[in-house]
Image (cartoon, rainbow, N blue to C red; front, side):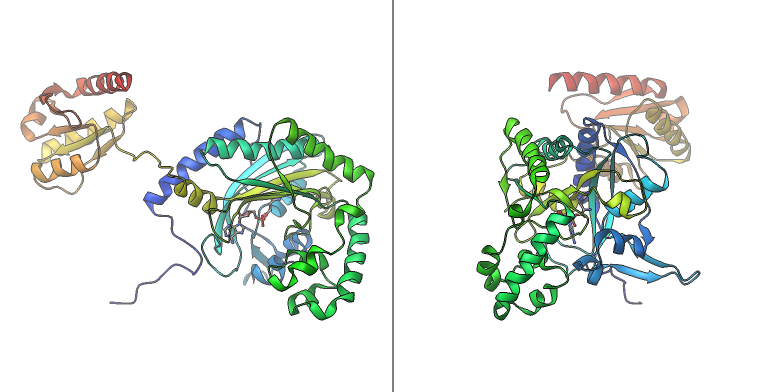
Length: 429
Ligand code: HAM
């Protein structure tokens, strides 16, 4: 026997029991997005590599070391499996002039790829729901996007997800802060680790994000960006906070929240739980007013976020959420050639009436088929033998209620009898 192949490390199969959670999650999310007027967009999984370099930034972990990039062997094009969805969404918005004379509220679902060290909650293929709003300059959309998150956690029955908020100001304000930060870290160069030294002149803001305990005190005393924000940036930040306070949504301002992608300005936020261990950020985003223009479009303010589906599903399970076990309405048992031919017709006829039907396939005795019918969770077994087939009839057996006798019905009467019973039992519940 040849050796069985395995999935790529960090890329997971989602098996049927697990997928039931995903479907329930996706249903809830689609309903929620509709409630806020967001419309779906679907972008390719592969994009030109320069798109991500320009959007996310050359000196970021994602671009420096996490992208699955390759050269298309047929035409030499540099391509990358998307590590996130915002860049591709902006590319599509520009390419199809979606935000030229109108605002757009868009969302996407799908796999993203980052070559990270796999661990609980961190995968190399993971899935995001991304939500992006184009053409809105004021703080109201930032606040609405944040409030949306709070509603989704409630819709999913999740609690304990906390909101962290910061403002990254505008590029010129960040430049002043950056210069002050470099001066500060240079004055304490002896305390920096290798990673921090490397970042000092390329991306000093990321040093503040360091997980190294030895750097925490130094980072805590570093110049704060908020002290470099001008009146307009402060007013925008205050505008967001005012709506959140009015809505009664608690938040923490975290001056060290800098995000790992370079396109942000003004508002940035993360939703974090302590129930998932080290990978506790379930949703993150912010404003990226410069990105559309930077990628060749007309200047268009924009704001959005993405959530990690694996992490949210883990949290739903943690909180005891369960999708209802799927069960067909009918399991169709049949034996004999004439019976099998009739069974196909009956199954399709019942489906025409909106019933879910599992048609037994693979033969076997009535007894073994009835066992399977029971195990399927179906409400009814419809049983057809050659005797029944000869008269165009079938036996209807209620599998979920004792004491109801099996009945012989014309096959045309089955749907009505089953639907009548299902309606009655729904009303009783
Ligand atoms: P991000 O913070 O890189 O932002 O990712 C958003 C979320 O995706 C994270 O908070 C996390 O839940 C999930 N995630 C990220 N990497 C992994 C991984 N390796 N394994 C599992 N889950 C992961 C963005 O991607 C931005 N595009 C968000 C955005 C949209 N900003 C504006 N619009």
